[in-house]
Length: 215
Image (cartoon, rainbow, N blue to C red; front, side, top):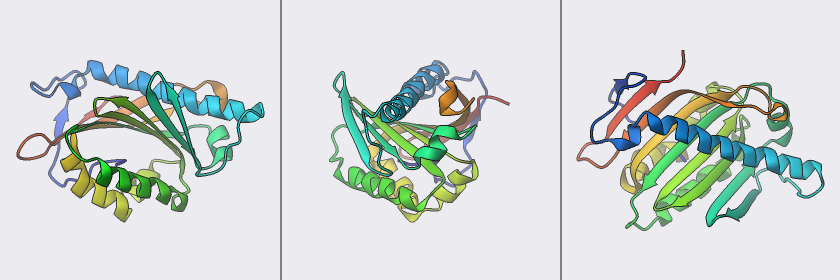
């Protein structure tokens, strides 16, 4: 799961309400829909911690939890339960990707498995959530300590290789959000999205853009 893009060319800079003809995945209306999906995934994280408080579930660091809701597969990895619970202003990375449905996903899945396993070496990453929506669409939510974690993670060789080699082959398009929570998980936080990056891999040359969402 790339936490940010790796291409070198300068991206197109989009205004707060600017639309891009022919690239519907960048539609402004999609931002709030994505935020609601991320908030639902955040609610799952809070729910798992509540179940642990009630003795209904044991949370083991870096042990993947998997369950089904309405034919959707949900995955959650809690990396540091204590800091996840009480951090006053967690940072957010939200990933939305549409895969090519006619391709063997094994190389991408193997890379994702290795990337997630490497979270143990990156203590700033506190949890990782993933939901498969069908028709090649995926959403991921990463909660982490500090904005600097993103720069540190981008230098991870596994992540760099996935962005450079696998994403352009396996994905049609990608949206990546950066943001933060308004409060700790114990205080019913909301998600504030600050910026988004767009990647379109369907043309002969990859296209990317970015949009600032809040000042």
